[in-house]
Image 1: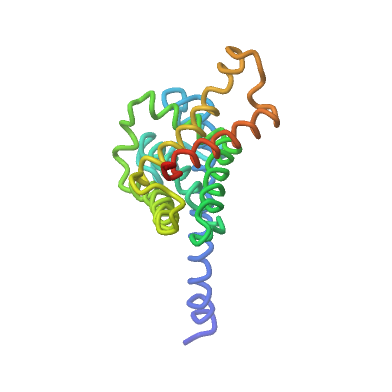
Image 2: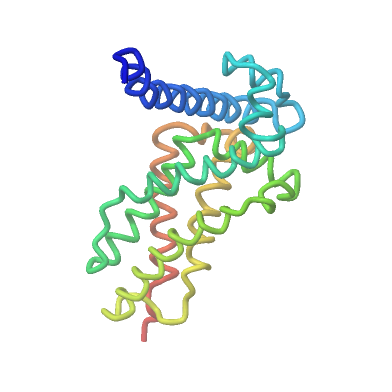
Length: 225
């Protein structure tokens, strides 16, 4: 075998790896741009042209990697849920201390909505569309299960220690926490005008977080005799 042939065969896998990395980078850039564009303009206003321009790419690349605008939008929804799950997985929770662990979960959820307004905006958009896009996702159910399972484990631990009531479902507690965090942030602008106070001030945010913690702990507490 000639030296030239050996060099070609040796370099080929490297070139292939570079191409794969470049393709993944292009795909990631499109996805990141789509999150921002859909959050700003909604599904209808978030055109392929706007997204490709924001990603410094080309329209054809969106169709190549995602099949269609709807396909891209579904992956955007999956991605924002995946990011939340990934952040949640970094929580250091001790099931043996269920009250403290549950407080940590509440702070995480309320804080995540506060720190990720695009997440709230995109969920608002999809709810306006009555969930017709996310229902087509094969991964949607995967992203709610871990959170509910964490709460289920904390409930079981608290119940075993006599700290939590035994007739509460993890699903219901998950919805209670999510509802309190989500509603506040998704309606903060109109509520600020309605109540005549800035609900985004540090003091207001801290007050609401503590209020949600107190509310949830009262809900899970066993009935007093």
